[in-house]
Length: 588
Image 1 (cartoon, rainbow, N blue to C red):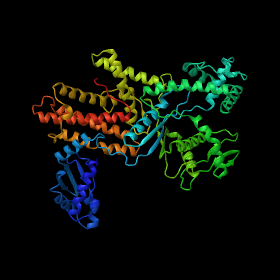
Image 2 (cartoon, helix red, strand yellow):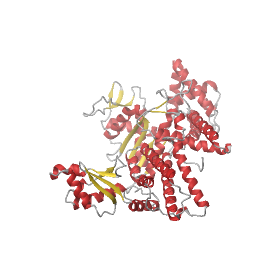
Image 3 (cartoon, rainbow, N blue to C red):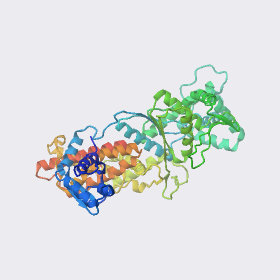
Image 4 (cartoon, helix red, strand yellow):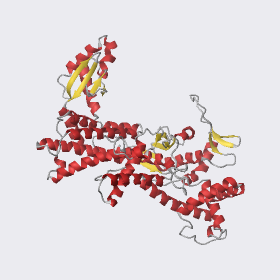
């Protein structure tokens, strides 16, 4: 379906041309004075100089040309030359009826679907997820869902940190503790045990202990570096241990990401890119893109237009070791070869902006990606505590993600039990659903690039711009629809008619914006625009609800129209929250 603004603009173009003016002047915007009009056109102001006429005269001519319009109920020329517009109730109702009949709720899917890869995990194996992993997971999951809804093929990749020094540290510490394990016996020829010699709990204790030792003991650090090198060179025992670490860590990560309703299509890591590094480095050298600088292999990526210093991209250190840039470039090589993406989008802390400038420029300069492949980095801001500093535990440490989720669930459970007589088991499940909305909406309602304050009290409130408020609105709609069904009526047969009140028409106009909001949110990688939209939509619904006696209305056709309007509002709200990555309970 066409966006309603496109239909309005087409009618304005007709009006300007009929009045003898350039049709391109016919462009409308939402009115910033809804008490006066719904849409506004400033084209007469823009055309005054061209036609050497007072804007109010041009506006008057256009209004006269639109007097028989099928779209506009009211058109008015207002000094000094604005054209104020109000839509006909039946036109709006017809638009919503077509929207209701459309499985995609008026959204036009991509005519030529693209393949988009989103890199939105970045967790390190053998380490628990902490609050620093929250934003990439939540934003990335939402963008993946929005992209698919808009018709693109979107592939989500966790991109694990599974190949660096932390692996050597774990292997070294395990060797100190259990030297008799077969993985450390050079002459061992049999099959290694199928079961790992450690649990996820063991790993979460082993890594910090090993990391601490490596900072205090240079010999220990050298052993860990050697173990890392042996692993990467294919040492049989170390590879078997690495596989155990991966299996246990990935299972735990899936559980924790699952608690956030976050899923990945690919569980690849830095290790998957390693086979592509040698050929890539050789090509960068042979084709003259890379050169030596103080023993390191680098690619110059500075451009004349740069307003700040952009250092060379280091491909290999002077000792021949690879870096994050090496792995990220090799990962692009792999992604192009295996998936042929039209776009690769990375979500990380915005402090990594320079890293991605260097990587993207190297990829383009060396032809690792073609000119038509879009490389984008969405750098997000920090999640801070009420003190404005990065979110910490009460003791000042980095909070584990599962602890944060548990705290939110407990706060929601307490509020539900305080306000309702409800079965404790049902309350727990409801608290889980509503708690997830508090976390995700609390994050996504902020522009991704900005820092924000994570305020549990505010995010879990049932009032204001929060996830629980949105869910409460959806549950209110469901309750009305269920009562209508219980009276023997069919919600699906209800038909939207013209609005009979200002609050009803305001709600209808909010629904009409859905396809425009979706297109903008995807194009601008901006889930916060969906949050802003559903907050306005929920407010519009609640104003209409408080002013209208829906279920006690005696006129059955009128009641059915209102029920159809509520059902469409429910569909739009539930579609939006699914795209944000959470759902609504049946009751609260």
